[in-house]
Image (cartoon, rainbow, N blue to C red; front, side, top):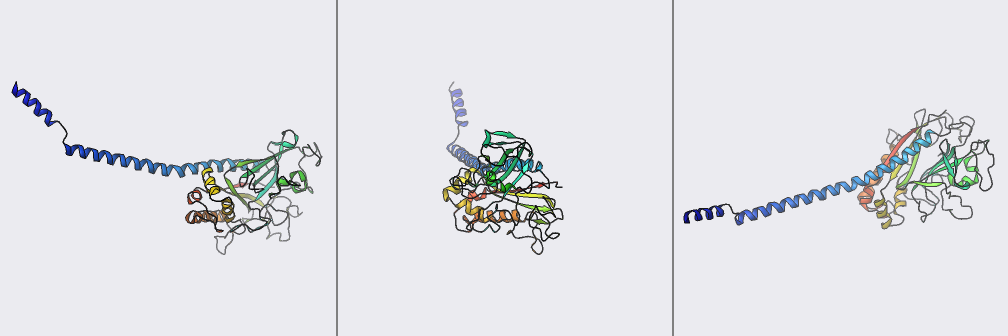
Length: 357
């Protein structure tokens, strides 16, 4: 009996952990916990910007898909007006060209565009009346910094009647028809917000406000477009200047409408909500200063031999500017921009074939 008791005690002693083994186990467990924590932190670090890019990707897709539908249904006729970028009769971009590297007095910034499209729209002036054709317009709102849509992309889909159903173009609570040349979009006072984007909102003329504008891209703070002509040139003038150097407008008898335009190229800059909040917290004017550093098509340097503009030149310049701001933490005018917010900004473009007459 004594021998068996001694053997059992010896076996119990043999199977116990030593102090060294316990210490080694604790060290290994601590290392495993440390590695797991680092892995989780690394995953979170990678996931955060990825989620921001998912947000901007999703918004850009919605905006560009909507534009694709509107432009595909554009009335491509030689007897209607288009409010598009050109050298004359257009104030939608900075009261002319030259925006980029600091906003100048009187400049409005992003482009505007307005045209008639065969998409359904509503008209708030007549109890939200639904129309079979729309006055469609896009702009980045710059009417006033206190406006909830300030520096956000807006879309107008103002429901209209076909001309001939109703010919009234003045008065209150009137659903206007589309107009034919020589009447222009800018000539209808009730449509003034389609061609204006200043701070006259709520003033005497109220030229920049229209309840039919809706925010379609809350993260889009810069909007620019240009043309690819049928002759292969990339330009900000919607006709062939080489063939018709004396032409001044789309109503010129030599080239009525957008007959020379093959494609409209659209570029947008998008920021996620968290990034916008960071920039706004740094300075109320920082996002405007950043937007003004993104040059327009005319002032963007060309990358080809001799400096001619090519597709993608402007977008490449925008990306370079964003990378510079992300590295320095400030715009060219010295406005502070948190680098992490700048890193989340994405540039998108898409090309819309007009299939014109």
